[in-house]
Length: 214
Image (cartoon, rainbow, N blue to C red):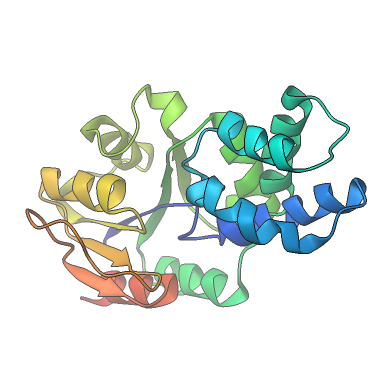
């Protein structure tokens, strides 16, 4: 049996699509066209830009009758409420667990916010456990969060894989621990020269199938 540790945002769920859906709703609420999302998305930087940076960019360029704090909360809320799981991803998780593997979500971020995404996507009913970095006190790539994931299912990292889209969090963390990994390239080329993933996948379904059947 293998422990499959899997990232949440832009791995198990298409976080960028959820964010964009929420963003378009905010624009519509203020009578603005959806195509403004095209220039806002780069400021978001796949969720890694601080929310005040995204909010300020929007307030500087758009006629929004909203405070910065309220806009920041609306951006967070949009991502949480629009978290969706693709049926093929749910099926891949189900197959892995049916084969005896344990699946644990390992995500950076706050417990409440990430937990809401997990529930809205229906992942809470599909995985063995989930670990958010706030609960551990450190973010990926720090070792403690991966050890916490193994402990959550009474396992160890000896038989673990890490699956994720971030080279500097998911794959680097696995590399430092000697844990094999699968990187979702999402149309990108691998950049770091001093470490590499064990495998590169086109999708999270391919990643799960690889790790579960190697």
